[in-house]
Length: 194
Image 1 (cartoon, rainbow, N blue to C red):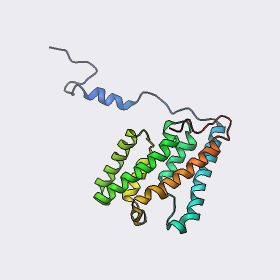
Image 2: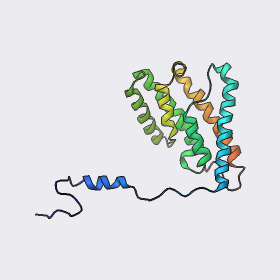
Image 3: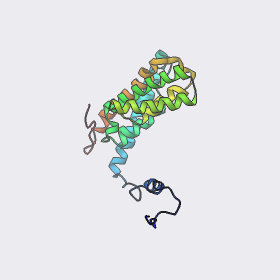
Image 4: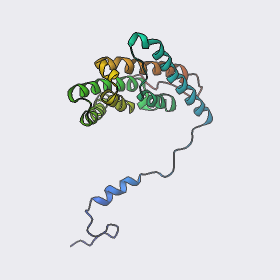
């Protein structure tokens, strides 16, 4: 008969302690602070990016009968301007992740309505589809969720939601990301297109 391991309390399931130890993480402390220049470029880029989305939204609102501003674009700005080298910030991920997630969200809303099940299914399916298509972009989960829990105006758009506000808003961020991130001598965007 094996003797109990002193690190595991008696009566604890053998796999529980290693499982719980994973929750401690592997690093201690916060990540290092970025340079002042990086901070300024991130601020300028995100200000101009979201400002451009707001401006285009204002100009196109009468034509589209709605604007381009959705909350998940703010999270995209964090990636495109705050972490432009991240694989999750690249154009394929930015555009593909948002548009595919928008389509998934619209389908889930049409099938299940504005429900918790539709919301959960939209986000989970969007994540799976982004993985399958190599377009993982975390704000895409919010884009899928907005399609389900959004306003009546969002719901009325149906599949057009994927084009405007989602696709058009992401495209504006991409264009500003290309222009602003490449002004800084130590920044480059994108790392790759596909």
